[in-house]
Amino acid sequence: MAVTMKMMSVLVAALGILSFVFGILAETKKPAAGVPIIRKGMVICKYPSDPTLAYAWLSFGFLLLCSAVGWFSIFYSYKGRKAPASVFFRCSTFFSFFTITLGTIGLAAAFLLWPIATHHHPNYNIIGNQDPHSATCPTAKTGVLGGGAFMSLNSSLLWLVCFILASNAREDYFEELDSVQKPKHIEKAEAGHTKALEDDDSSEIRSQ
Image (cartoon, rainbow, N blue to C red; front, side, top):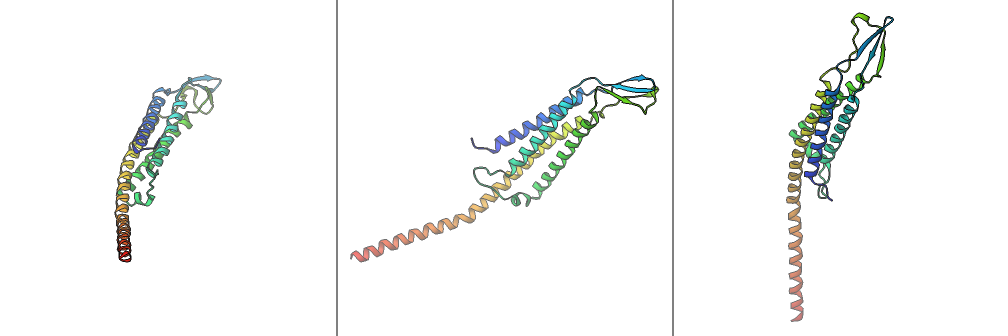
């Protein structure tokens, strides 16, 4: 089955929504803090088991897939006709949205990966440099994973905007290309037709 523009746009949107959903789940399932346990001047932080890391990794993975499919959908050769990349970047609007999309993807990745790094802890963690009477066991900052989820969704919507702009630029390019090549075909057809008439005339003269 041939790849169509509609299929690619639906796939990009679906991957962006999945990244958003898993990012929101990671945010809502994240524990606010661990439980400090004071023993002999040391603080042992006990963290509950939670699926935050799994959801965050899934959100990041779907973000990467959405970005890869979005990139592929713009430069893919639909119906066997490939437009040069320069055709798209000649349009200032496309260039602006394409740049914003890449920046949004970078921010989404940073928002998702930073909590993953800071939230990566065992169920028990010993902290020895805190005052036992005011000890805390923090986790990743609240709201960052949610922000990454919304950035992921925004990046998929921006890919769709880039996709529409690229589609318009592609159509204009092929229309211009066909308008330049069409006279050449007509010229060849007319030349062939004229030659055929001349051959017929010469054959009639010879027969006479």
